[in-house]
Image 1 (cartoon, rainbow, N blue to C red):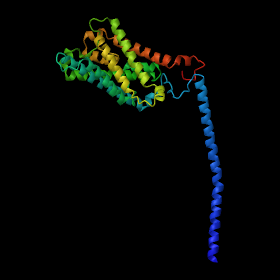
Image 2 (image 1 turned 90 degrees about the horizontal axis):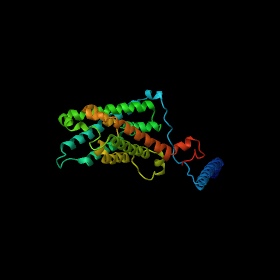
Image 3 (image 1 turned 180 degrees about the vertical axis):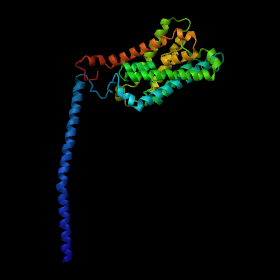
Image 4 (image 1 turned 45 degrees about the vertical axis):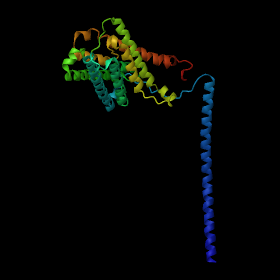
Length: 326
């Protein structure tokens, strides 16, 4: 009899516990169902809105543009990230000038032999180094390594004015040091073969040289904007695009076209560093071309990408499509 009472007591306790769990469980499930239902309704509404936009001929904006950089941001000077970026730009430009000018000098030394890398090898040297250095420094400084690229990004409000100026100074100082290393290691060959300095070659006018620098820099900066566009990352996320690769390839292609004309500048720091270390009159006579041309080309590329391809002008004028990707 006592055993029977104990069994009945345990059964009642278990039943009451199960009953209480059901009482507390049902409302929670109901709440979760309501929450999920609301989420489903919102998702359906979003899809319906997207379908309506598509029917009207528009596509919903599926990417986020970074906010424009302030013209002057005093807080930047308090951040270690700014000075770290300047160091990265200095070292990257130093390495860029050292490898590329050493390749140019080596080509000039062996041009009569079959061992010369030729124009193709020089172009690969410049393009390959840009690919490597942009890949290494993109996450630190953005991987500019070129005052013209920095200028174009400044015009597009990707960097502030103080950062742009400091970047250009660091790049020019790095270029001088890189060219200086080449001269220190092989001084006689450096002076004999022109120090890798840029100038308009015989048979071409200064106007042709200027046009070549403008077009070449336009190709480079346009590629930079396209390869780093957040819209491309969102729309073509199924295509693995490594941004430094097309940028380096653009430098390679431009060098193939313009080495016979100007030796290919498209980078004022590269031309400035070589001219300072070489120091001959010829390298300074045409030097203005290698600043004016790249800066004009960068400005044209920035305007083309921002105001035509990205339709920033239409949005700025308050068009009825200002909030829709066009």
